[in-house]
Every structure is written in structure tokens, then in C-alpha cells.
Length: 260
Image: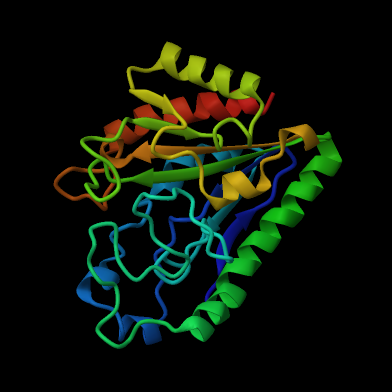
């Protein structure tokens, strides 16, 4: 099996996670997928490239290798909902954000297959997060987990209208100390013309909610980016270099602040 995830270890107080930027789909699943499933359309396309600047830093980084259609690393293995009453996909999604079936009829995974995928794909990623958070905290006495995401700016089944540009999530204030997120919001407002929201449609997924514990000096923040600010409109799976450079520069300011 190809690498489950890409990992770079640093010694700063920060761990950046990118759980939805994976594109690999095992051949045995491809044969069971519809065209919608094969397209991997709900990928956080190329969001990791916006964080390329960390390669020159001392920051730890983990990025998924496989598509969220194989297993969603930002969902609970116990099946708890993130947003009760709102549309969301599960740990092994059956439908895309557009409502299209991911599997051809009769080829959906059963419970035993779902559990096998959790064991093979989900746990290795999370065990690595857990051990890296512990290692970093032992060095610095505190740790910051930054969960890097992006999504199409218009997904009618998930939200109305156009999504704001920068969507910060701290699980309604439970995963991160207020002073940290307040400063990040200030940096965003002072250094960009992007629209900014906190804990609105996207409040943070399983990773943010599960690991964030400010009282134990573990602060966790999710940033969901509107993909229109860095991908080409005509070719939505390709970077728009000018837009991406602008957005990446702002992300660098966020990470520099957290890395003090």
C-alpha cells in the first residue's frame, strides 16, 4: 500500500494537519465507484500547496494520502454528527456534497468494510497526530494544532449562497483560547480584504473538537478556505498562481504569529 500520509517533523509548537487533500483511491474501490466517486470532487484541492512555506520552517506537518471517499479522517469513528440537523457526510461517505452517489448500486461498503477501513486508514493518521501532539507538548509545554481545509465556495446542500473567504472554527470556543483566535482574526482583518467568520457554518470537525483542550495547553483551530481564492475558475483543480500567492502570504502571517 502506498504511504497513508505524508509527514514532516519539526520542533516548533505547531502541528499542521491536512486530512482532506488526499487523492489516492485503491483500484478495488475505483471499480465500484460511479463517475462522481472517481472524480474525488470533494477534495480540499491542493490546499497543502498554500502551506508550502512551512518546508523552510521547523513546523510539523501531516497530509492525507488517500481520498476522503476512502475514509474521512475528520469524522468520528463512532459516527457522531458534527452538525445535527444539517447535511453532512459520514466516515465512509456514500454521497458527494452534490448529493451524487459515490458507489454504483449494490457496491456500497457494509459495516465490516467500514470498520476495516477505519482500522487501515483512519487510526494510523490519528495515532500519528496524537503522538506528535504529545511530543511537541513535551518540548514546549504547549502545542497548537492547525487543521487546514478548503471547499468550493458554492455547495447548496451544505450552505446557502457563497461561503465567506476565511472560515475559522474553534468548536464554539471550546478548542482554542480566545486570545489566540482573537489575534488571528485581527491579523486577517488588518492584512487582507477577505471576508472572515468564526464558528459559523464550519466550526471545526472531529480533529479540532477531539484534540483541542486549552486547559491542557492544546489549542486547536480549523481554517476552511473558500477555494475560489486560490483555484482557477475554468480549471478548478489547478492553482491560480496570483490568487494563491496572496492567500499563502496571509497564511504565513497566521503561522508566524502562532510560532512565536
